[in-house]
Length: 419
Image 1 (cartoon, helix red, strand yellow):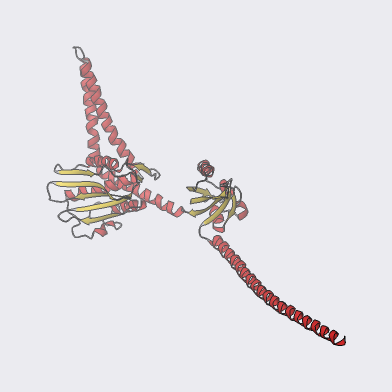
Image 2 (cartoon, helix red, strand yellow):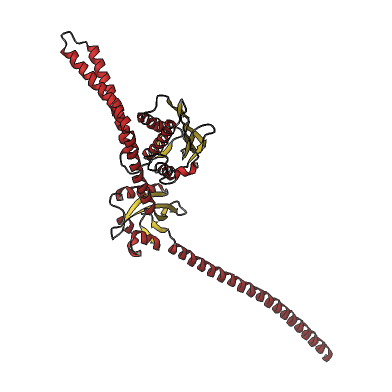
């Protein structure tokens, strides 16, 4: 009995030891697993902390960039009421942050433009479209600032407008430069008209003289003893009207060219613009052996330009060609005006003459301020012309012809549609 009990006890002890060993093994395995999980968690926590720090740092950098940006940055709600304005935006409006938030920007709009600007904003927000405007702000101290504003809609997942994010750039200096160019161009146009005044006076005097003669013939006809022919009187009135229209057209074109107006760009047919200015130039008193040839491409697209300024460029180039052919002994004398599509987005206009050319002068020198080969010239015509062309996004250049004379060319960007 005793032996059997001892054996049983030994067996139980052995089994118990095995179970303890198994438990220890499982504990060690689980501990290792937990340690690995803990390491993973620590690594994950480390990554998340680094990501949070990076995000926080990135947000701080972004905030710093936005706040220190040389461009005004703003954000609005769906009613285009400002909910954020960076420091530059506040400077442009001359307002504090609290003053710039809400409808402060609306109150700062120039009175002459407030209704138009707000209407364009309303239309853009109703259509959920970007809004791009040039307009003026008036600061509390009375300073007027020109700005270019562009803003883009921010939509939520359901396609509902949350508001706008946009930028405002101070373009006052650019506007002032444009105004100075316009003033200088106006003076140059008046000077050009002064040079052409004799020919213009003669040209206008012709239809006025014809009107007076037709009117005198009409009086004699009415005072005659015989019956007055209805057809004859009708012809006289027709001739009077035709000559009056002719003189009126001359005056209209002259007035259009010399009037002082704000620059305004419209979509126009460049060929028609050139034809009108060529007709006006022909009153300059061209020599009998001079021919102006128009080589116009009827398929060129429309251009968006200030038509008075571009007419001034063409007239100046024509006047230079006119002076060059008069100074030349070449006969017959010719001036050719050509329009063509230089590329899908660019139109080229050239004025070619067979005059004296540059006479040893560097073609680029003619574009220098106050350089002139004319006795009474200002030396500003080509400078102004180049500035006008470049302000339209084009280029003006000059080159000698292979045989005789010179060619001036300028380019203009064009719309991709034909008139």
